[in-house]
Image (cartoon, rainbow, N blue to C red):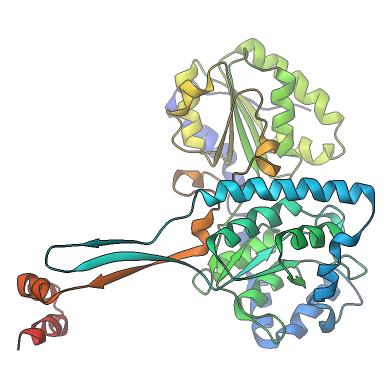
Length: 438
């Protein structure tokens, strides 16, 4: 395997790197026509369309009666007495508690201001009524993304959303992985549907006889689900348009071993052939050592084919002349995950403007954030960290402005408001205010 070796001597070189990574952008466009047809089909035929697509792609014997998981099946999900399952669920429970504690700090409060003339202005923060969460099944349901359920459901619960529904594609026998049901039971989420991909998004957006429509759809998925969410923006709220996973590691070659950096890069490269793993360093000897580690470790991975393709097409070791240039490149990349594998990461933190999540120092590998620390692992990708943020409680809330003007307010400012309206050619606006003076 040949790892890309790039040089970034100055900011004028950015266009070269940007062009090399451009192929990762907007891959969902290639399936847009098919997804539009799926959305329309579910809008027209509802549950029958959902069942038909599920038969075609997931479970050949699937019927509409199987779409919703019975409440009793969810309630009994933790009755599994397998010691390994019990231990795993204890870890899931602890992870959920850590995620909840972190997100509780994000809660925004409604607020009010008053003025001397008696006018009251304020903002009410309230949760949406209903949320639909998507949880990928993974490899036919055998590697369920339980962490995705936690990372989406917990902030919705902290926001105060009362009705949370979950969708996940069934296995070939029509069942859901018991780990998904167990995690849902721990969270107290009981409304669960067996459906996947674009038809799940369509059912959540439009509603069917079995599945009530939602206000917000959140959760990662394949290219069909991602495209569906993009096309549904405006009809429902969504979390974000997430692209393939990515990581950038800034390494000075002094803190941490090359083996650690290689392992951290591969933690994202194994996700997807479109994943990007980049190390930025100003240490030539370290870059050489890292290339060897990536070669060795990739060969030993169960998903080596995927990781190798990701590294060869979208991964790189980038050598810069110094630390300042390295951080300038980081801010241009605006990576989903950023590791600062340097002697003093805190001295760098203030110079990082754009990153989804920042992992500080040698003892904070990216998977700590994926599963356990508490911050959300649903993060902006493809450079969108320049203007967007991690999934949070705010994604499940909305804000309403409150204006209570006093009689004195209109006496003092009504004429100004009317004049402003006429500047924009809106006479009825002006008369609306002036009618109070007659």
